Amino acid sequence: MFHAWQEQSALLEKGEITKEEYDQWRYKYPELDIAKQWRKVPSQELSDFLTDALKDESE
Image (cartoon, rainbow, N blue to C red):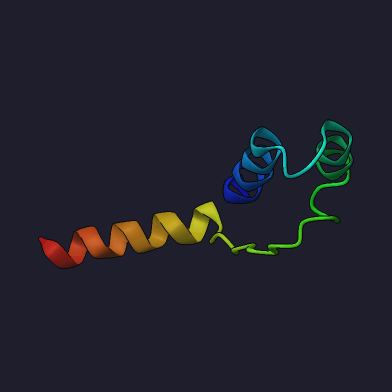
């Protein structure tokens, strides 16, 4: 998600989009996000389990 915001900010700085277009995008994010580079993140419980399992395996 950070990449999408960074990309839009860069377009604004280069003058490729107007402040109004930028504002419209950010007010309706993620609906207007054309990159759609979303990633699922594992739950904290699963992350903790995997971290513990890897620690046990390396010992």
